Length: 461
Ligand code: GDP
Ligand code: IMO
Ligand code: MG
Image (cartoon, rainbow, N blue to C red; front, side, top):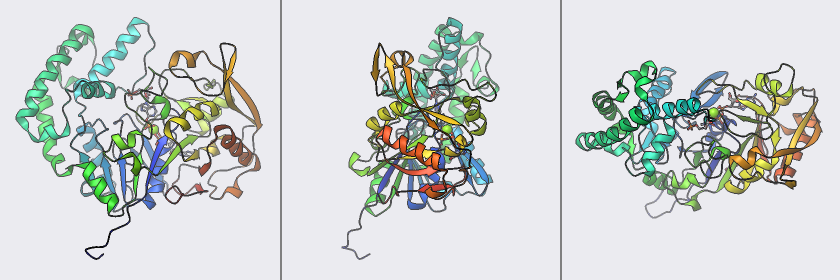
């Protein structure tokens, strides 16, 4: 390029989950990374669990963007992510053991709030207190996500940049410990709780101790320093120079702190708009939003789920989804609740994300079901509504309205062209498109990277 020539800026795509997480975002981000030079996480933390299957080999990721398996691609952890540095290094070690080079390609925002051991302790103790009080627990991942975001919003969080200054770090840590240990011991009765081995290492009489937290953080700081970056600047520069960027959402729209089934949600904005705020780029840089959508619905943890099915009874459609779909969480190993596809929920998702297109995943899991139900709306207070209402209480009172479609007995596993899909599977997809009002641009037919049907390319749409 000559000195005066101006590069054409790259094209950028946002990938979000449109249901309650685990839609298959990781698989699709890995697949789409073929067309990207940078992949960015912009919210959540190691509550996420993304599974990639490449040539039959499985990789589980929690914090590192799902673009890491493509050589040469840069991966960014944006300011919107709450970061456990210990978990990040565990993940790096796992990838390095598998021969994946990470450190030279990973950039971590200096503005990420840190997740520290007291965050996980508070998260776990609060859930235990709910059980004790007989109230429904949220069913969090116990990773300290909520308490870490609370510190961020309260403007007292320790951030990645504090790791570079030991005295500053120590002073802020002391303040945080004074507050959180007070809450832990007096409000959450932490001294009477049984703690897992890892957390017990930091604890004495229910209080998190300064020395182990500080010493560990300072040791981690030395390793992290080469990766700490002004991610906002780097993303803008890379994009200006022509790099295509892929923004990888974690969790799902119905787990969004504002738009989800509140209070049974996570503590960040999972919607596409946060790709900008959570990484430091302008909203005008987000050109296309791909909504990853399971061909049915699943949810882990508590909270309302209008189309939920009985999934433990052998032979039922819910059991079929849970077993054929191997619906077990990657992060906590919990069983995922299963239910019919919900187009009224998708309408809410389409609207709050500004979806450009859908990617339907796990269509193959429905092979062999004789009929399928699709929820088009709900009955609430004697009226029929066509979109999911806001908040857990109203959602819990909704009775789904279904239409029934014929299933198919042929296999769709591994299909890579639309015409290979059973006719009734094609009809099901058409109906999803009609009832949600969003075009289907991609279909996934197995966990494998290559088993994907492309109808319209998000980077070229
Ligand atoms: P994420 O959190 O959205 O990245 O999704 P997870 O990785 O937690 O869960 C999705 C699961 O479904 C993983 O085990 C994937 O390997 C698997 N998966 C993804 N796409 C497909 C598909 O089209 N068919 C089948 N059978 N499994 C899929
Ligand atoms: P990925 O990125 C599914 C759920 C938890 C709980 C609620 C709050 O793999 O799709 P938290 O620990 O975040 O405070 O828990 O959110 N949850 C997820 N469910 N997939 C996820 O991530 C999730 N991350 C959090 O089960 O109900
Ligand atoms: Mg997941």
